[in-house]
Length: 218
Image (cartoon, rainbow, N blue to C red; front, side, top):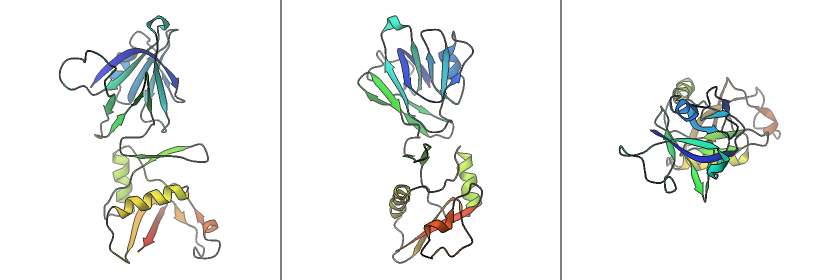
């Protein structure tokens, strides 16, 4: 991978990491595995942006050289030489797990939604954004969770009907047998009540360290 540095600035990004050396802002980002973008501001400050932070949008816009603001994209470049121009480049970065993050270009600006390519982002009502992906495997919950942790993620609960419907669509792609149960592991547990009562939804709680398996019947 390479660092492509252009005259530009970050217009939106809630989570940033101040970096001590403004002289080595871009090169410092390049040497750090977690860093996906550097920003050297016009006043000499340096900020790094990590893909490990909670998913949130990062927005970058190209600026005039006279502003003195620079952003550095860590990106994949094929071949041994740099492209003649950055305007037609697709900025994308591969992380140690092999997953990629890709910037979306619109005119003279770029945005990153905080999720790995192939993962689905949901913005929850409590202000938290999450990235989701389903995996097909016949394994126990603790094994499933260890596999999530191995790629820098974790199991997560379901917080909305929208999320539940999306997971259902993902499951249907695995072609379950007719009239058979199909389950997936998530984070949480059922309360020790009658979950099939009229107050079904009020009988569920989601915790961060317990089991929960939801089944859809066909």
